[in-house]
Every structure is written in structure tokens, then in C-alpha cells.
Amino acid sequence: MAKPLIVCRDLSIIYNKGKSNEFKALSGVNTDIYEGEYIILFGPSGCGKSTLMYSIQGSLPPGEGTLLIRGDDIYSYPPSERVYFQRYVMGIIFQSFNLIGSLSVLDNVALPMIFCNADKITRDRRAQSLLDRFGVGHVSHKIPAMLSGGQQQRVSVARSMVNDPKILLADEPTGNLDSVSTQQVMDKIDEINTFDRRTIIMVSHNAAHLSYAHRVYYLKDGVIVREVVNPQRKQIKPVREGETIVTELEQLARLFPYDSIDTLRVKSIVNFLTQDITFDQLSRLEHSTELFIKGKIDREAFVDSLVLPFERGGVEIPEKQAKKMSQIADRMIHQADDIRRFRAKKDNAGVFFSQHKLAERLRDHVLNMYNLKLNKEQDAHLVEMIADRVTGVIEDEQFNERLLLSVKNRGLGLTEKEADDVTRYFEKIIAQGVDVSYKN
Ligand code: ADP
Image 1: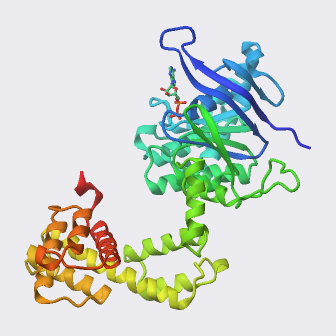
Image 2: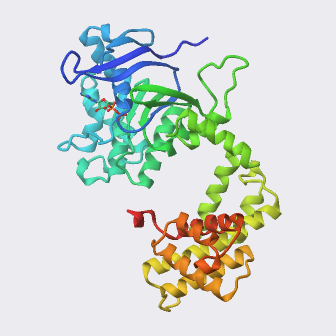
Image 3: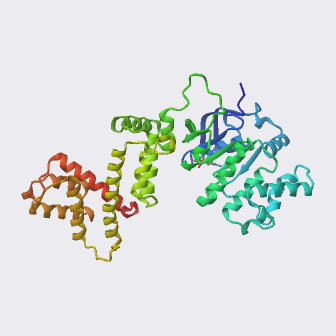
């Protein structure tokens, strides 16, 4: 069986050891990383991701435990051998590019080859071919400041590959980039893994990146709290026979990367108790709903995406259910638009939208939704409560209480179930119609 390329055993890293500001940034970390794997070190800021990466890179010796690369303790190497290791075995990409501003792009990429006795023609030829490969060959004569962030990062990808390293380390490589450049850089790194078969270790706190990796180590407070296998990539790390590769919890961990194992267990059980669709379907449903809310697909296309078989990218739910869902979603979006327009103090139709008028329209929505028949007095009370709730004079609980109150006490006299249903629906509309920033 293949041996792991990088092994950490009970690895701890302590900053400022023995001083008053001593800090244990990693504690008892165990990893086995195999040649050709794409590994993401994931977790919130300050959890120790970079510390682990720079320890593997040879810059932070273990305080406790061991770190072996290709079976060797790199920290026992004499200095010249450690430098050789850092120069030829590891390539590195930084969040802030770290290009030398006074050198041309070509010279930046060729620079690491100076130390390996290659002549200038060889260096320049290799640097130019890498720049061409990563789509920045045409700017090789410029200085870095003349390039966009995305171009600069692709130059640093080229630089990291110039000595043909076995392992590529990337420290939040897209942290400073817009979404288009992020995609380009992620695709190039993916290509280095799948085409050049290099091992990648990337530090990231962007959940969208998780699908690139074979495996993800989740860190929290200096500890690896879980390891998740990506079911969409053929695994390199050997899996023991009979070992489950993908559990629902692993899938959930990819959907909700910041949640603890306990929270994921709760989600799994609640999903089982309340829904007859799986988390995979749920995440597809979310995607389709997002497109619908943003107006990128119409109601018909929304229904189609819900009905489409799962293998063809759909949610795969019965047509009747899909139509009902689309009807409710459509109605909610429209009703929430009323609230949004009211907040923005403008109506597309050009009509001044008074608070009372808004409350009346929302009353119509609610009555329509729940088939409630109200007398004149109840009707007036409902309009008043809705106006109070929309403007924040009362909270959702008070709204609910007033629905339950008798009519002579300025309530509506609904049953508990009716009141709960109306409150829940109404809160949903308000939530859709009010930006979160409004609450701050
Ligand atoms: P991440 O990459 O997950 O954001 P880091 O590995 O950079 O986290 O840092 C982990 C913890 O170690 C943080 O609390 C950070 O403040 C601390 N830390 C990082 N570098 C040093 C250092 N040179 N000296 C002291 N503490 C450090």
C-alpha cells in the first residue's frame, strides 16, 4: 500500500514558548496526506490553518509530536538541505501575491531558478512558457503593478511551479480576488492537481472551494475537528474495505461547513422527522429557488427544475408538489416586494404607497392565503396589527397574541392554530421583504 507523503502525528505548534505571551496554535494534530491529493485546510480565521501549512512548508518546527515528509523529519535536515527541500519540493502561493514590484513579471517568475544554476535563456524560456500556460504570457514584460489582481495571482501560480515542485501550498490564494479571477485561479490550481498530478494543500475559509478537494480537514481552535471526504472525487487515500466513504453527515458537513458535529446530527434528525426530501435535493431546491428569486428563471422553468430527475440535475419531486411550491414561492416573493417597496418608499407603479394601504394589501394576502372570513371590526383590527408589525411597533409574539385576543379587546379571536399559521406566514413575508441590514 502506498505510504502517505506527509504525516503529522500529535503535532502541536506553540508560539512564543516560555514567554508570557505563549500561545498553542495547534494541538495534537494528526494528518495523512497522500501524493496527488488535493487537501483543503478549512476553518474560521485564527483556527490554525496557516500555522499547519507553514509547519509543513518547513518554517515552523513542531513543539510536540512529529512531522514527516516522504518519511523524513525535514526539521532535522542541515540548513542547506532544508533550503533545497523548500526550493524544489514545495511551491507556494500567497494571498497577497508577494511579487517583487521592481522586477518584470518574467523576472519574478524566473527568479527562483537563479539559485539552481540555470542560464538566463533557459530561465526565461521556462518562465515564459509557464506564463503562457496560465494566460499571462502577453504581459510578461510589464511590472506587477500594471496587472489586475487576478493576473498577478496567475503570475504567482506560474512562479510557484517554476522549479517543478512536488507539493503546492496555497495560503488563501483567492482571498483578494473578485469572483471571476477567483474562478480562473481555482481552475488553474485544479489543473495542476489533476493534469500535473501535484499534491495541493490549500488554506481556505471559502465553502465554495470545498468541492475541488479530495479531502477537507476542518480546524477549530487549533484542533482538527473532522475530516471530510469529497464523494465527487475518486479517492487517493486508501479506504479500508467496508468503511463507509460517504455518510449523510459528511455530505451535511460540506453544505454547512461551519457547524459542529452535534449541530449536523440535529439537522440530520430534524430533516428525517420533517421532510421527505434528502439534503442533496434540498440543496438543489435552494439553488433553483435562488435563481427564481433573482428572476433568472421564470415560474415555468422553476417548476421544470423541480420535477427534472435527479441524475439530470433536477430536484426530482412530484409535479403536483412542484407546482404548489412554485405557487407559494411566487406569492411570497410578490407579497414581500410590497414590503420592500414600502421600505424603499417607492412604488414601481408610481403610486405613493402609504402605510395604511400597504397594511390593507398585506391583509388581503393573508386572508387569501388562509381563507379567513372576517367581519368589519376584525378586518380593521388586522390592518392595524399588520401596520404595527411592519413598522416594528410590535414584535412577532405580540402580533401572535393579538390574533388570539377577543375582538372586543381589539384582537381577532382566532384559534391557536390559525394564529400560529398566520404569524408564521406573515413573518416569512416580512423576512423576505426586509434586508438584514435594516435590522442593524
Ligand atoms: P488561520 O490561518 O486559521 O487564520 P493562523 O494559523 O494564522 O490561523 O493563527 C492561529 C492562531 O495563532 C491565531 O490565534 C493567531 O493569532 C496565532 N498566531 C499566528 N501567528 C503567530 C505568531 N507569529 N505569534 C503568536 N501568535 C500567532
